[in-house]
View 1 (tube, rainbow, N blue to C red):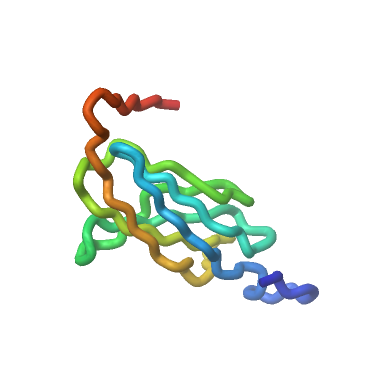
View 2: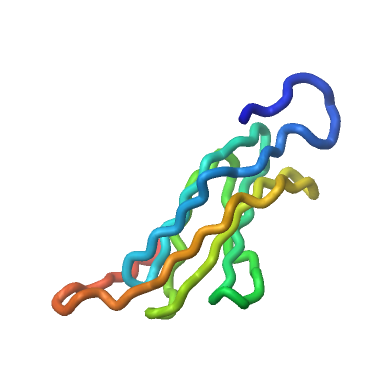
Length: 116
C-alpha cells in the first residue's frame, strides 16, 4: 500500500503498518513490521501480557523504524504486540497483532542483557 499523493489533508499519509512479527529469544522479544506510511514522526509499540492483559505503550521509535527489541521480560510468559504510526496527534490504524512466548534457554546457554 502506498500513501496518497497530493493534498494537505489530515489523513492519508499514515497507513496501517503491516506484517508485524514477534519472535522470542530468552527473556526478550524482537518485533518487526513493514512501514507503509510516509512522513510519520515515528511508531508507537504496545504490548499486553497474556490474552486478557491490558494494552500499554512500551516504546516509541523515530520515523522509518521497522523493528525494536523488548527486553527484561518474564520467562514463560506470552506477550502480544501491535504497532501504529503517528504524526503529532494523528495515528494510523493498528497493525496486525502477533504474540511470542519467552522461553528458558537450554542448559548451558546464557542470555546476556546488553544495555544501550
